[in-house]
Image (tube, rainbow, N blue to C red; front, side, top):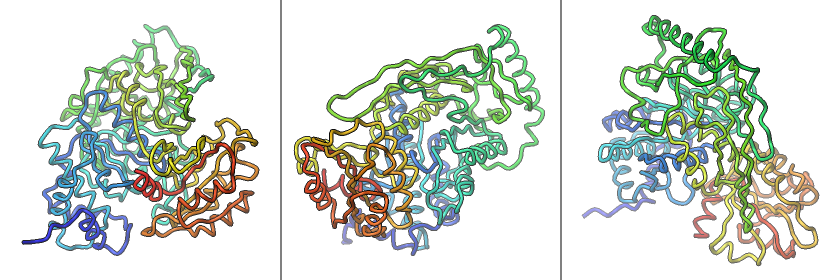
Length: 570
């Protein structure tokens, strides 16, 4: 009788199949998927999410919206925080250990000992789990978070997808994706596939140019925050989208005439299309109709005719075989409207915590979703960057056909641990004196640190006689830039002066930036800095040096450290 292999043992076996943790390639996973009878071709309609920061949060918002809209939605994320099961979510729930062991055993057997990275073989296992769940009970949606980059990421082995979502792109993983922002953007832009809609967060100019060029090349309808919509925060009045328009009747008539001319042109040229990057080439989303009170003019004379999907629409209806999505040259599009939009201003407060659940609204400019106009959102996740992620998720969900009410409810109900996450219970919290708070964030690159700094800057200035203010426990894995991370994190006025930083190494199975190096760099930036051999010791160090009635501790810099804290604090 053979011994039962535990999940931990099975995962350890898979980690030994390749000498490198990262080795970007699609050849190995494609070979394995063929041996598994191509589960990637039997998946639900897929939304792919790439970017540097905010992928997981954006996915969490979309998943929550899908749930509130009544859709059955599966999700794939990485890395996990506490349990590997977190990576494969079936209808909002982690895959069971028994089901996970089953798919892992089968992919290991099909792989037959061939070299393959841990992420590649576990991604193949996820595809198998999703395909089998879809066969048992038809799913409406599968959210795939890209692991690293996009072009050669294992998730790119899927056969087709219906929507690409791009979160903010910044410097990270330069050793694998390229040394410049332009090269990194090029790797991530590869998820924009032919005639497949793409939606992007607001990007830096160089990234924006790369994404727009890719969308033009792929003839992919492309929407971007800051250009086609924006989040309008409390106390901000949005300017008019553009110059005054013609009358509504004349606008609609002009739009319909241009749309008919476009259809004739596309029908004549459809057979000349080449370079099928997405195998869903001729099975993409389309739904035509007029957008009220808008006149669209383009130098190329190419526009897409779309209507806002109502709550009655379903994703299944949106991807009928044989339909085509008309291309949009968004770079040349000009939108003329006389509307003046003023945001709905109201603040949701939580007197017991810092949670700044600020109600914001979307100002729609070029998007064909009038139902989003001034739609109030109250993101459950903290920070201005999460408001932007919520806006990105809302536009993506509207494109998929979610009802406005479901978008609102989903944005407010989404949960995502270790992203400006205040711990409110557990052993770690109980060890703190009354009046102290502990926060957790897994952000680990300069862009993430800038988001933390922006959050800190919006907090109330502490009373130096009673409040110890913000104190930091920082861990960074090897390959990250401690200098850039610290410069961004400590730039908020609220932490200037003499912030207290304690550097700790991440969990032992990950190579780390030496705590001594972090402490030295923090001191050079004016901080009072120390090292500790554990998070518990770091907290004790902070409390001994900040004997105030209350204070706040932010543990940041590593998702692996965040996961260890959540596991131990449970």
